[in-house]
Amino acid sequence: DDLQPGSKMNVTMMISPTIIDGSSGGTSIEPTFLPRQRAQAVPFSTSNLTTILEMFSIQPHSEHASLTRQTLEDCERLALKGEVKYCATSLESMIDFVVAKLGSSEIHAVVTSVEV
Image (cartoon, rainbow, N blue to C red; front, side, top):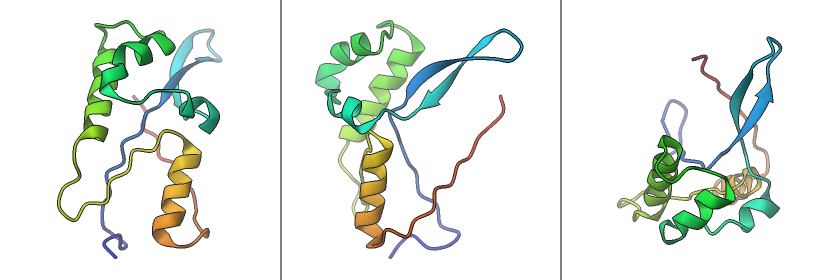
């Protein structure tokens, strides 16, 4: 009932960086969703942070490690009163959640990007 045209919804997702070869000969890191099967093998919990960092070859004291820790902490934080909270671990799990909440499989994907 709360999601109406013009309202806002914050979404936090765990994403896996992928190195993409650029046309100019360089490389860049682009975020991608984990496939469901791979996401189900990741122990998403702050108590397993070291394991997660190792799985994704993230240096423990890097900015990426800090962002990963923050994402896990945000997901483990209790929902606010009246908030429906869900931390999707894959694109498929996010779609399942949306379909369950909206009660319809008639959904349309929207993608945004920001040039930096």
